Image 1 (spheres, rainbow, N blue to C red):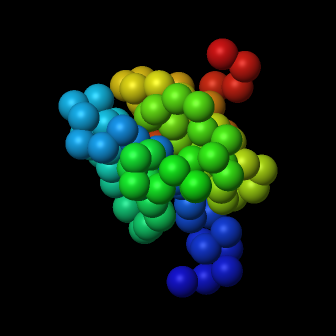
Image 2 (cartoon, rainbow, N blue to C red):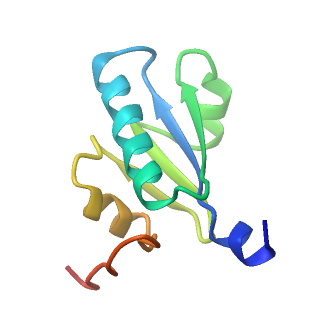
Length: 106
C-alpha cells in the first residue's frame, strides 16, 4: 500500500451497546457503506460500552451508537443510526472514492 493510499484509509471506532438490535444495525450499515465506497480498505474498531467503560470515558462518548473517525485527521464524531449514507460520509468529511463527489454545504 502506498503512503497516499494509507493516508486516505479511514480509521473509525464505533461505540455500541452490546448486541442490541440498534447496535447490530449500525454495524451492518457501516460495513455496507465502507465496503461500497472503500473496497481498498478501512479500519473499523467496534467497542461495546459495557465491556470497555474506561475507553468510553476517555473518548467522552455519551450516546450510542457513536462513530468516531480518527483518520484522516481531524477527528470527526457522529451519533445516530447511519441510515443515510451520503449524510454519514458528509458528516465524517469523507469523500466517496468510488462514486460522485458529495455536494458541499447541504
